[in-house]
Image (cartoon, rainbow, N blue to C red; front, side, top):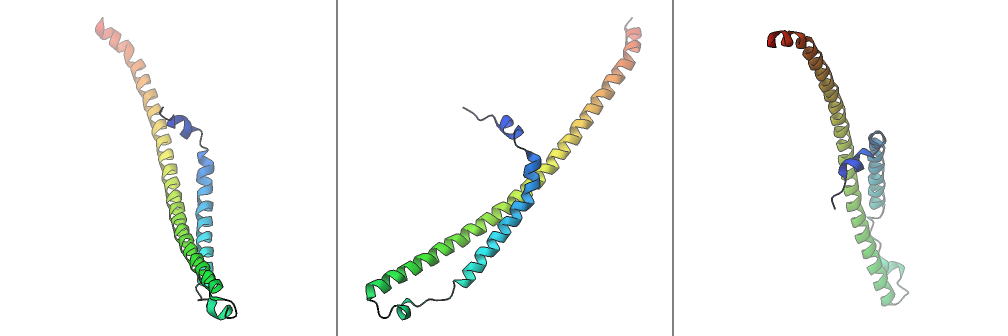
Length: 135
């Protein structure tokens, strides 16, 4: 069953979407900066061997694996943050373009309505002359 896109899109509060787009883009930028700052703080190498010299090698091996896993997760988080920022910027551009197209469509609708009224008035003005011509 096809989706009723016209109904779905007509129920979207476009003014709210357009108004919130810059806020979303700023939030994504702040998130990206925050993630980047945390990544810079965690780039220092932690040597698990120094901290756990008194413990057995099994514990230090598990700790090293956890540190490596944490670095991998941080790298994935940074990549996700980049993607979120890019998508939010694209969303802001899309919303701006949609607003421009909406305004242009509204102007064209008004121009079409004015042309239709002018054509109707011209037709009414020509009807008496047309009936004289046909008679």
